[in-house]
Length: 552
View 1 (cartoon, rainbow, N blue to C red):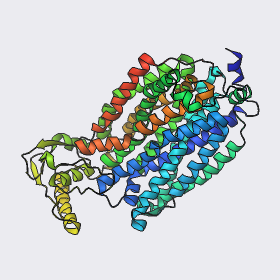
View 2 (cartoon, helix red, strand yellow; view 1 turned 120 degrees about the horizontal axis):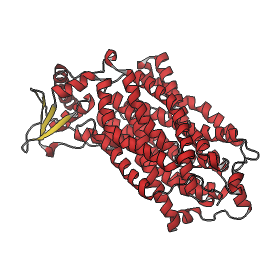
View 3 (cartoon, one colour; view 1 turned 90 degrees about the vertical axis):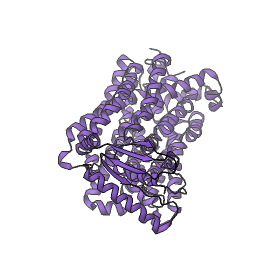
View 4 (cartoon, one colour; view 1 turned 120 degrees about the vertical axis):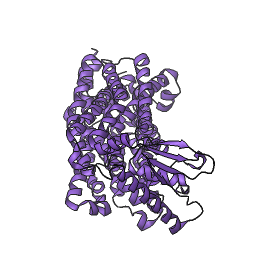
């Protein structure tokens, strides 16, 4: 081991505990915000997007969740440049402050009923501010820890940062569950949802206090003292082929998969349980808290394993497990969580007969399209009922109808009317369809007595093992891929594109696919295909980085 690598493990004025604690606190804050927003999407869609229809409003809320991810690459470039030019500490002190203020402000926003279209505009604006700040948060945190850690334990000690995801989720779900329990579901949906956002002000204060007490990274300080700091980190990272090649490998070989695997295992699974399988929200919260407690140890275990056998084999295991398990896991989850729904889908399959020219995609990001054809009304009701259905093309101009087993339910066209008359037609179709679904055994809600909580927990555990095996060693692998002088910039961009664009848009993309196809499992093709591509890229092209000297 070179002397420079050993020096990285000598933190000088920063104790290693203080370094890890300060870095983890801000990252936990990041995940706390994501989990609060992601978990409360169903409520937020009603509070801020009440004017665009139930299905479109839910997808719109998911896209608002993803909007913060859209600007993360821009934040990565800005704060990466700051971190490589002026220091790690300054960059991630600014990021955590911006992020915290925006998170708290969400809890103070007016709703759609109070302010009309101004409400979703303000919500999206705050999500964009959060996303911009978050673009520089994670990269700064893992680099700061890695540049203090000894080489032989770099995976384990940066893996401690990864556990902050568990603490963020645990904190978010704990606050949500406690608030729900104390206020009751009606009060929580009306105004109590604000409390988890407002509570984050305490975490913000502690994060800032910790980070203000830190000194600069020893590797960065030495590089700066020796005059080796980059004067143009963006140009050196993305306009020179040796560096750009590493950026692309990090994106397509690691981060693209990490985004979709992690968000499927932690976010989309919650949407699936609540929105499709109709499991009560408190039950989902308890299940996620339990599996999150276990995941905290798994991050550290897989990070430690990567110090022993290499980053690449551990991450390949995670991606491979995700790709092969997603479809069977979600099918098994349906049987465990809502056996009546699984039985009804088998005994009385649903078929929508319609002229395909009258069927629109059930999504409109600006809320101007009226989904009022007979096909669209039927699809909207079916999408919100959690029932899978198949499409059967009919002749041009034919009015849509739904076959539920042997029972026929005619839809109705409301495109020639508007307002109360249109709403009345929708309600009539909805009443007939839901009555027919109930008669065929399709439940309105999962029966708590028939929910196999243990089996669901074990299924979730498989998904979390896949996510933690990929995520645990990831920090060390990314840091080891790039030279010190451009590390913050070069690392942050692929991380935020992978996590932000591929991962952040995963829930919205998957639910949109489900709404468009009628198959409740079709949204899983999104993470499976992307994960498979990353598996091949990592297997054949990504270098092993364990043990590399990072003082270069």
